[in-house]
Picture (tube, rainbow, N blue to C red):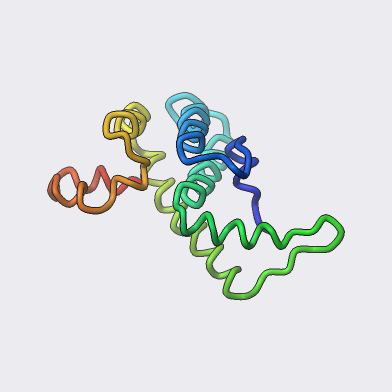
Length: 142
């Protein structure tokens, strides 16, 4: 079953990237271990990272929307094996990112997002490489 990532983040399907990032920051703070010690916090945290991982990436979001649009209220959703594998790959990728962020200080996660004014995923690439290997690991969080 395909998870509705828009509902997870509490945003509309036409939400822009800034709205998605804002919703993610707000919710991730609620379930980070510094603020929430409940048993279900980790599961919700992982799901938030998974949703953000897909919705904050234009290419993934477009593919996800195609899959989600197949849903019809009167019939079960049927996705192709390729789509199912892609969805599973996104989940695995997000699980790795979630593990790193779960172990990272919440303030550091939020400050990186706000200070550099890029999405967590935007910390990859040329900017992260220019900083060097020492800080590169920090930027690999998202």
